Image (cartoon, rainbow, N blue to C red):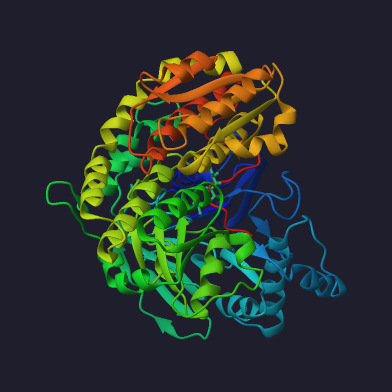
Length: 611
Ligand code: M6R
């Protein structure tokens, strides 16, 4: 949610920032801007995607060795040139970019208005910037000091980066609740919301912690806390290759990421699951295995697609571990004063590891004595760092805004945890455990087989692309897959879609069914199959169009459905990792057929760092 990039050093700042903004565009893309210092403070900003800013700047003087850049996902104020970042202070000397929300900005704005300040934008960012400048002028203190004082009075989340015309050799930055990575080069520094703009210049990075402030020159990085005490920057090495954040010959990141799934699931299992010996090694989980086994309940906390992974995991954990599981929307859980007992196990599921609602929900739970396990994709992210333990999903950078490969990797990790705990607890027999371990090991190859259906799915997308509504139905382990399929379609094609447990349909949604309504059934052969067939009959009787995800040779489904997509058979516990893939491809191809930007769907952002 908003991407920030900054540079200081011997290179030209603008090309570094521009490239970085393009890499971060998945975080928000309603407007973008840069501020460059070269004697003058030049600020350029533009509504729309980064390419439009780039076009505007052709032929302009962008020479500078220090600069800040921003790509925005609007919170306060509509997306337009005026509200785009960077913002300039009243004196015209400071420029600032911000990712996050200043919750008490309205009060601060009133105070500043009374003092005679005027505002050019509707943003909370401009208020914070002028608040900082006001403190600087009143106290005649350095900018760093003014930032420190201001931030102590701020309620909300932020990463801010400032440049000062009077100090063209320094960047000032601070963080609370939103992500910030500093790349350390030779006499140069790079700042960004994630490592992708930094990776091609240096692999040495510092993840800035909450309530830390950095004063950065080309050859110096001073890190302090808001109490003005020096902190030692903890330098880590990035474990990421440039190829992972490029399209690699695919038309879109989303398609690339769908097709990467055999490999990403394999990477996720590698080094953990040994099908030959039947062992599952997960050091983070082992550390808390006793507490998990003895937990009265496990609470899965997540948002969006990650929440759907949590729902699948609820079925799996209850079946294999016989532990009561609750699955919570992080945004509800964080505010509703939930009962949390010491020893409750919370599993936070997040691709980005930065989702604000999930982060705060687990902070609250942790303060009440819960054990926090993180199932996170982005290494070093906030959720990963606040968790007591956990397991990375190792899906690699996911850039398409619609989550695909992260979902299947989350399912793989959660399944391994459940298998390990169930087996050690004795609620899962050795025979069934070994069977599932072997089947899980075979999933990457089966995913490759599903992907062979891509051309067939493309044709179906053409056939159904003009639908105005779609229903997704599944039962058991595949009910959450129905929810996920509907979410994918909504996000990418803007077609209204709902996911339901297939049996629930008759309690209301069946009223929607007519000859124009495509109904997508997940009808793989599992313990619910006969029931799902009955639900299909009910739709056919009302002339709905049935598209069924089935296993090979399922003549009953073939006889009923208008169209089928065949996926390999798998144990029902593992089948969501296969059945979700045609739904990802269907959403992708429908979105594409309708002419939409599938990697950057309207109104969305990849990493939701505001509540
Ligand atoms: O990074 P997270 O997994 O915490 O993100 C949660 C949701 O914002 C995310 O899954 C969102 O729903 C995606 N756009 C789904 O495709």
